[in-house]
Amino acid sequence: MTTATHPPALAGPAHTARLGLVRTRLEMIGLLRTKDAVIFTLALPVMLLVLFGAIFSDTLDGTTVTVGQWFTPGIIAASVLSAGFVNLATSLAIERHDGTLRRLALTPLPAASYLIGKILMTFLLAAGMTMTLLVVGVVAFDVDLPTGADDLATFGWVFLLGVTAAAVLGIALSSLPSSSKSAAVVFTPPFLFLQFISGVFIEFNSIPPWMRTLSGIFPLRWLAAGMRAVFLPDQFETAAEPGGSYQLAVGAAVLTTWVLVGFAVAVRTFNFGRER
Image (cartoon, rainbow, N blue to C red; front, side, top):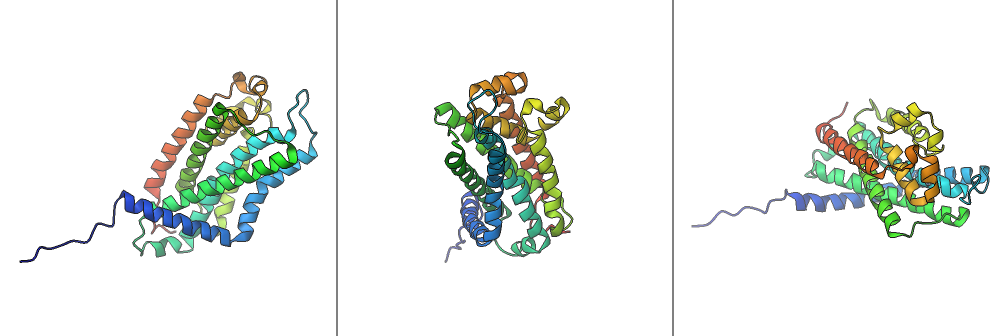
């Protein structure tokens, strides 16, 4: 008498995670092969920093802070959001409409592993953009890097929450474009609008109150505030922020809420076979 044996189960969190790491490698290989896209993605925030640093005066009026030091946190925040909200959402929309997702649906790859690959690729892209900005900022504009434990801890949680929120939002919103050709058009204008009302390019206290209130709903305002808390002297918190505070606790709550909302929407809306 023989006892029936069964093959080991392929499904499960560990298996899904391993396939997610494999998928991350494939996503990075695919990204790096599109050299023009990589160069443009990394170069755009650097170009903005160089332009602002070159056009405006060396230091802000009445301070010893360089213009490069002031613009760096805002541009880092915008780059972090763009890695997910623009880049990831656009790539997912294109893959949905060009049939890539439908073909993947015919393979054993779990959807969760595919999304793990996309999310980790977003983290790596955001980290690369941030590192590039910091290197250029230090070399060209004498940007002072954070060294204190509190500043490094703040940078860490703001970056992690920011990238996570951007990534899950990118997944959640990737089904909005009606075609692959319209993907970039759908996501870029809202992103540009958020940059101007969130204190990326303009001192936040100088923005009209109703715009400040509106921006408080969205993650970029809190990403930018968190980065300013890390890179700017304490005098800027009292002089240039509403209420004289970066409101880091509020920012953490808002970013966490966006992570949870984005995740809930992404789970309900994403699947391999969905294609318009």
